[in-house]
Length: 260
Image (cartoon, rainbow, N blue to C red; front, side, top):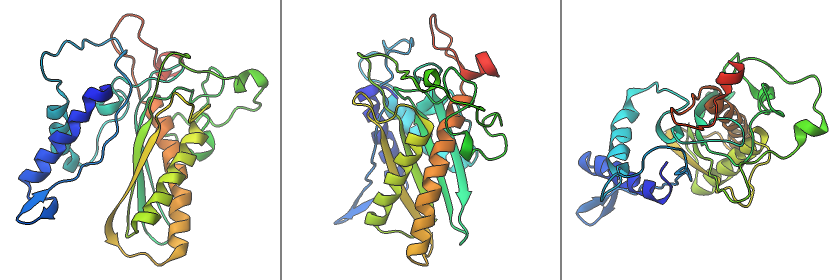
């Protein structure tokens, strides 16, 4: 979060990695490389008078320290705190899957979209076809989608938005293969948000591999690209489903305020 001020967060992560002795070797020095994207979420009602330095470096370091703790909350937390969509509060979402070869792939997305993640005014999600169990309500798809349901719902012509996220797998993939994985994640975004990838959207998806499991070839990449689409769409719906409204006047309502 934090618009351009949030770029300080990478410095906090970098500090944690450096303290752990991790990074790209430059002679006798290790330099941690931390890719980053930020949300355009400054107009969310919260106070921004933080003094000379924005708090995002410390928030980034705290996030780095918490990353090893395993399970984490979703919704109005972390990068999802100030996130919004066209009609409901946005949030942080996550979902995972396991391929037929046993490779795990997971997505984490901060949903701050220009468009809407629900059909019409809700309650069903555009991503309903990909839901596992009842992770975002188990409401399924509407029996019929009409022209009004498909009508464009956006935050406004003068506003900007950014949905950012990452897909990560334990399958060993090359940089070019990971690029394909990130493109498939964008497909998932387009299946969960309508409209998606508008000129005012700064949508960005990263892809990474832990390299813990060997790839068996092209078949693995094909299936992982397919699963990247599914887990991204699910993560986006979950981010909105789990969100709660911010405690500020005129704050955008949460999905659960109306349908929960």
